[in-house]
Image (spheres, rainbow, N blue to C red):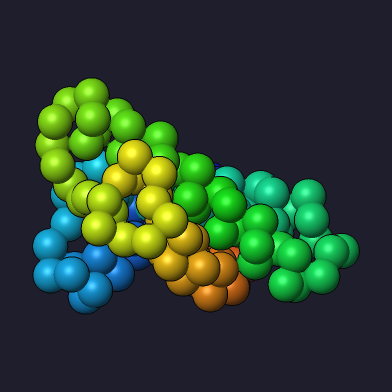
Length: 125
């Protein structure tokens, strides 16, 4: 398995696990979203932005997670009608798919996500 594959697989396991801890349930789409989030965080925040300030990389990681969440929500919640989540009652939400409070939470999640990417890249097979 490649390092990128390991990073995707790690995100695919971590995101649903966090969701189970946070809200007591998850959906298979969260495994896809988690894998894509961690892969993109690695490519953008850990590689392309390596020399940038950590705070800027965390904000960028939050934007990545929020973007993936929006795309996943539009596909699985709106298009497929899975009703995985609904942020309609949250402040500053967009179409019930993303909201400002969770985007701020994703800023904090981006830091351990970047650390997880670095651990995956150092893992020997």
